Length: 273
Image (cartoon, rainbow, N blue to C red; front, side):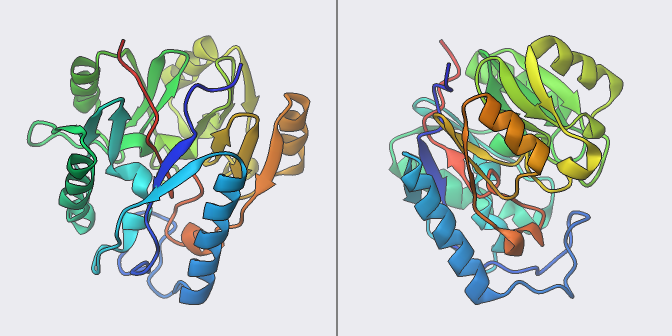
């Protein structure tokens, strides 16, 4: 059974994207992004997602906010409600009012976290089988998961992220169906491993070198999956499950630690009953 969500996305053009600071292990200011390749890769990704059967809406880029292209981190959608992120790093805090304004203008009720709670939206929280799989420690707080569960009326399963390279849960977990997910256990603590083992009946388990390709940071549209890269073994497993794989290279964005899922925020998620 295909996912009930993943057919509407919010994206932000890379007009002001660049490696202007370093807030994760992938970012190095001396490794500059190429503006022309960045624009081409983003436009190719938009075309690929639309060709897969999804719609794409856009939010205007803002000068001085280079990571706003990673819209997944802006917050978490639940039907007509939008839980606004509170970023861990001050470099990204300026994105918060931009996403708040966009969702208010779209008619959503915007929910804000209490002061002092860090939470980075759909980058650290993904629906799976009626629950929310959420990461904490590196960018989001465990306490924020309690707030998310209460505000959105959904059970939250918390995974502690233990590897700084995999700083968001969407680098380690990709829902495919209600029974299948791509998972990267290299990034979780022992308790998190057990949570996912019990939750996902039929996982595609990534080896560490496969996880480092960002292949878990992919977007699923029905029976199509749009990936930044696809290791051969993973591709065979996906095809066995009936998925058509579309690789859309985003290596310019990988310089900032973000792949295909990071560049998209699903707008058609409904969590609460």
